[in-house]
Each structure stands twice: as structure tokens, then as C-alpha cells.
Length: 154
Image 1 (cartoon, rainbow, N blue to C red):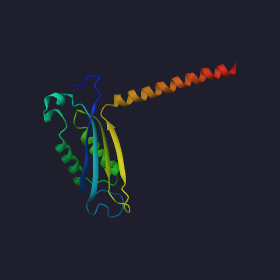
Image 2: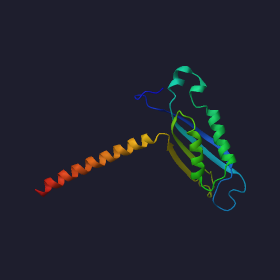
Image 3: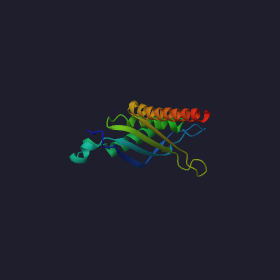
Image 4: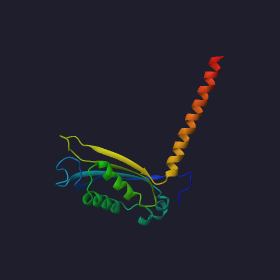
């Protein structure tokens, strides 16, 4: 179990290539086309540091297989929807606190590669904490500005 002072670790799997039928343009779903995926996970792997046991970390082979399965069996018009499906699957593992998924369709547009990067957090409280910090900072700046304005009026 991770203590509050230990930052989460990251596990990244790059270069996952699968063939899927995704796209909004005419004909894009008619034949499989290459889809490249990168997954970056913020994970609690403190137990794996000492146990050296695969059960205490994310199994890269299983992660790879799951991503390939999603790309090859699902059909979506938008890369954003495909990325969301992969994100949801990555967050099925309770140790994953946040996932970032990059989906690319290589050389689709005359050599250009469209790419979508999405992220999702498991704990909404993390998001609220960041938002609360931002809100607190905005309030402090507003108070400073008000004090400055009052001083300038004198």
C-alpha cells in the first residue's frame, strides 16, 4: 500500500499496433487499418518493488492483449470514443489511479498522422482537490487585487 509521501509510479506501453475498423469518413470501416496506441498508467506498484511478483503490478502482456482486443473488435466513428473505451478498460485495475491513452492512425492524411490523447482519473477527489487549489488561488489573487484597488483610490 502506497503511503501519502510516495508518489505514484508510471507504467507505459508504447508501440501497440492493432488493425481496427474505426473512422467517420466513407469507407474507413470497410477494411481494417492500422491503429497505434500508447498507454501510460499512474499506478500503485509499491508491493511489486519488494515482492518481485507479477501479481503485484500491471501485467504488460495482458494490457497489450486487452488494447489489441478493443481496437480489433469494437467499431467507433471517432478516435476519441475508441480512446475512451481503452481508458475505461485500463481503469478496471484498482491499482491504476490515472490513465493516459494516445490513439493514432498512421499516415492517414497524405502522410500525416492524426492522433488523439485523452486521460481519465479514477478518483474524482483528486480532480476536486486540484480544482479547489485553483479556486483558492483565484480567490487570493482577487483579494490582493481588491486591496490594491482600495489603496490606489486613496
